[in-house]
Image (cartoon, rainbow, N blue to C red; front, top):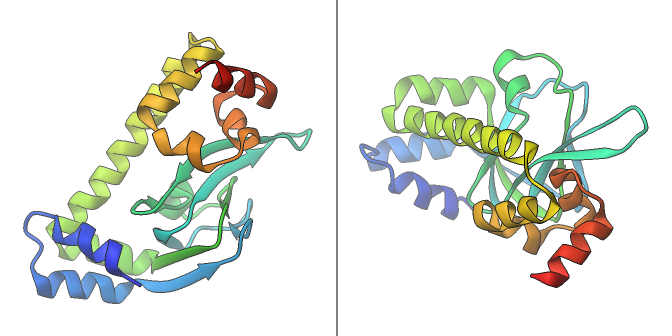
Length: 189
């Protein structure tokens, strides 16, 4: 079950076979059902997940109960409620499996132990942080001046799996538009 993660680690510069096996040993398999909540809103995040199969999303609910999707993760990606994982405060968001998932979970203690011990794993963590920051910045600042069509085109160019793998309702909540607007735009493209 750790094939995708092992392949990802093997591509890291400076990752010896022994170090890769040590890191892999820290990851435990987790299977989820479709629409299962993995991290609840006020729960403190204890694990970092690698997606071997399936898809995850991070989302919040506003006071009216309307969902706002913040991130979608697919096969070959890491995913967690990162602020909670880092500062050990309540997540203030939900992590949900959108499909039946095969995940690999590493505890916070083991994650940071591997970051400290293995330079290649520290670089993976840095890449996760950089990619998250850059994607969030592009989304926030790019979306401020975009109309609905420009938002959809941005997602097609920057996150092509998103519109192919998730529902219009969830994609629309990520884009900040209505599902019907998203449907109309997709029909035009």
